[in-house]
Image: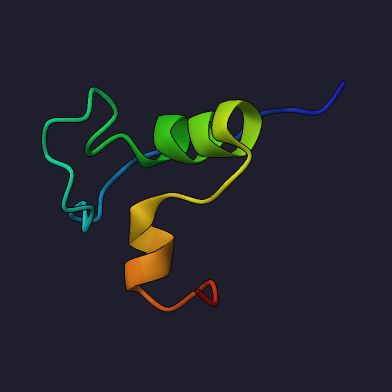
Length: 52
């Protein structure tokens, strides 16, 4: 079984969607977008990590 690493969320959240329930909780946000939405969070797009 794979051991999960703790998520510190020590960096400021760059997502403009401040009304989101996952705002500031990066691990939860990334997992939600990956597993439920099948896309990437806005912060990845803003940072240029993903091509638009």
